[in-house]
Structures are given as C-alpha cells and as structure tokens.
Length: 425
Image (tube, rainbow, N blue to C red; front, side):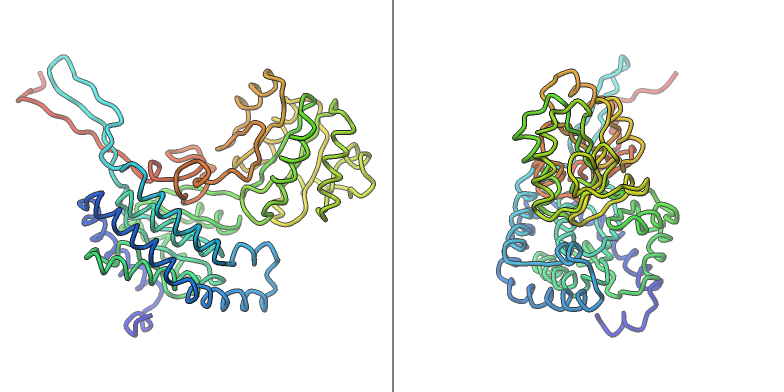
C-alpha cells in the first residue's frame, strides 16, 4: 500500500478509487476485444510464472487462519496450491476465448415509419465486489469484468488479504504493460470493515454491488447498499431422491454432492428421501455418507434407516453447514419435496434424482431456485462448469441476473434508434 493511501481513511480510499474506476470504465468501454484478450492471456501467463510467490503469500493467510481457529472447510476455501492456480490461469484463458459480450444485438425491429430499433448489450460501468476467504475470486472477477468492459473495485476478506493482494499485483502489472488504467481493477488495500460501509454508500461511482460470502455479509449488503445488488445468498442446496431413482445414481451423485468439497456453495446440505423409495437404496446411500465420516441428522423416519443418524431440529432445515454434515428428511412424493425446498432453501441449487418423467417435469418446473438439476450433483453449480469460463457468483435473486453470473449477466443494454428524418405526428 502506498504511503499516500496509508494516511487516508477507508471512506477517502473508496471515494478516490470510485472516481478513478469511473474514469477507467469509460476507457474500457472503448477498448477492443483483441486488446482485452491479449491482456487476459498475459495475466494467465503471469499466474503460471508466479506460483511460488503466490503460494508464499497464501501460506501467510493459512497460518493466520489456523491461529484464528478457522474451520477445515474455511481453510480449504482459503487454500491455494499449484492445481488451483493452474485452474485460475486456465479459467482466464477460457474467458478470453469466449465471444465478446459487448455489442451483441439482443433484439431489433423496424417500425412502419421506417425507424430501425436495436437493443444492444453494453457494460454496466463500475462494479463493487465484496467477498470472503476465496482468493481465486480476485482473478475470476477481474477476468470477467475486463472481458465485459466493466471496471471493478474489489474488497476481499481479511482472511485472504495477503493472497488477494498478491493476485491483484499481477493484474495491475498486466494492465500497466498494456497501457490500460490500473483503476480498471482496483482493490481496497486495508482490512478495516469501515471500507464495506463506505463502498455500500458510494452510489455516485459504483453502479452495482456484488457480495459473495456468508449470510451476515449478504444481509448487510442487501440492507445497506445505496445501489442495486446482485444477491448471492448462502448455498442451502438440496437433493431429492425419488422412488424411481437408479440405485447407483442415488448413491454416487449424493455422495459427490456432499463430500467432493464440503465448503463450497454448491455442496448439498439437505437430503430428501421419497417415503416410497426402496429401503435398501436409501440405506446404501446413507451408509456411504456415514462410512465416510459425514454426520447426518434427520427426522424420525430418516433416523429409522440407520442408528447413526441423529435427531434434527427445525433449525437444521435452514442451515448451511459447509462441513461434513447434512440434514435428512423423508417426504411423501415430489410435491412435498418441492414444498420443503421452496420453504427452507436459499434459491441456489437443487437436484432431483429420478427416472420418472412426470416427477422430473414437476420438480424442474416448480422448484424456485436459480439452478434446478436432474440426475446431477449440485457441485456442478459453477460458471466454469456451465462453460462460462468463470463466475462472479451464483445469484439467488430474480432480477437481471440469476444462477451463475458470467459475462452476459455483467452487461446491461441500451436502445439504438436509427431514422431518416422522421418526426412524430
């Protein structure tokens, strides 16, 4: 952090970065796709060339996190390794290879009077991004914002400050090399929580706020922000196993959805079993989870399937564990499963495991979530897995962006009207 910044308050830092980002957004809007793609490819190369330095910075965050007593799941979200850094680099290259989202003609018509009207995709302007623990978000956000020609102000969590600043340094180096303003991707360089409040009030510069983190952070942003918010609520994801399921799908998909990585927002937190499901399939599915060390709490019917299942409380149905634990309930058919999900879920990602076409159709049509799946693990809830290269997050609201927020969702639009001298009577 520069000496000048160190003497400023969080409010002053945000105001300064906001004004600079607004100017940078105008330059980005005029930057060609070829220039942006070259910058992204160069950033990917820098990530690969700086693995030791990035791991050294990340080690400082991990050591501090262990001292603070962060859970294993949170430490996993915080951790970088060679494979994850390569994943970041590959993700940046995928974003570079995607079609340009800016300038797309979304709709057009010609009126009887000869006016030609087009709805055309344009950048939003300046995005504010507040996120916790996962340092890879720094790179994902930068790549997506640059490709969509949006400037972005990043505020990472204090737990990942060393990692995020190291990654941001590589972004800044790349922007300088290609003659773009560093303010195109800026970062709040202090852990002071007052910076969050300053960002939420900076509506004269920040056009949209994007929070990504725990429930308390999301609620604060949605309550206090003076600008529109792409809401990313917690990932309270469900799997419903219908009576028509294939045994191997029930067992393997459920296991993957919970235990592949327990600390991500796409991890399954509640398992719903059809009351008419073959008991042997239900027991085998639960046993595989329990044998792997997953704690399960459930209602009385679920507890009857395995003595290792503890009693669930009402709070368990609305808890995102982010660890090796899940809640389990037995429901009477797909309609009751859908009602449970819509009542207790966070509108993130929910999946049905079934072969019955009518049950699948009902589930896909009536679950009110950003992502609804059939015979697939909820851990596919990821922009990269959707072919978007990366994502800002999974939006759980209903306005503008819903589900994975990628390039197209980071654009708004304007109308272009071309005439030949028409006047309105």
